[in-house]
Image 1 (spheres, one colour):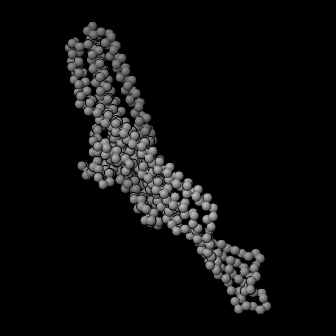
Image 2: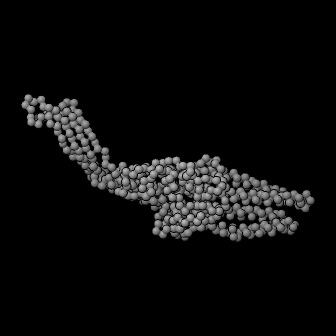
Length: 470
């Protein structure tokens, strides 16, 4: 079976699903100094029906992944959080709002040139040099962290879809195999019943085959019942009603990978988006430390003051009678409470070191998860080789020989039942190993955020799209 697993789900697909247009930042997060604060923000839209693949009996795994990418509320939420974080950057780079003050003199102040009636002051505060850059750089790292969280959501979603898809595929094959064995037991029961009628078979043998049929029928019912919650899990990831029918996928075939174990382990620290999120948090706290240190320096406020002056009431009016006053304003705040500023710097440094240790702990945890996923992958691969090349052919041969011997009266019925039971277990074990192989591969790809079945770029360590083979 061709799963049709895509080498990559391009972000263009997500942009088509979620946005009428997307700014450059949505494609490639840049340092704060290079953001265009006038760039439009992408607006979310429900995916058009024509963009969603048809999930019928001909659908491949790629169709399920594309459907989930366009329709997942978790992915949309992560995308919206990223857009919200991007919108914070121009806010962080902007100056505080200018201050306009109007003053009305209830009791006019009489001056030499006339009474003061109204006063208007316009002022603008300018933070200390570099403060806005620190704020914008910290906001840019917040956006970068949100961007990586979008990657985390994407790979988690794809793993959930693949895991449920291959479980549905396993159940379909297990049900088919169980039905075949059930039909075989029914034929044996008919043979035994005929022999028993002719006094050529014992009653215990007839009872034994009926017991085996009952056990196998119970297993079949359990597999059929399990398909419903498994399909519900897949439908939930696709954001569809959980009772929506899922067509049975075809047989699962193991996908080869192109990297050795040590190369996969080396991909983890450089490609895992959860670690990249923490890297962005670390950089953000560096900028927040620098921002806290700016509090030791004053902010500068400049302004313009206008005072309306009325006509003088003096009997002898001065030459500049009633002339309005205009003045310049300059003020600075006094960073006097040094203990507060030192505490803010200590707080920022503590959060920075906490982020560094969080990153180290997360990498250790993910490395352990990756080792376990590699074990599961190789264990499934070993079982596939064992059952497909050794045990299952021998079990088929043993059953055929035992069946022929039983039909000619040269073998006991218990031997045939044992051979049939062993054949069934090996058939189910092979299909289980196929599903486990693909599920563990999906977990590996989630952890290293890389398609391990395609060609890998040595420069970037990221899978490159392969030519379409039709």
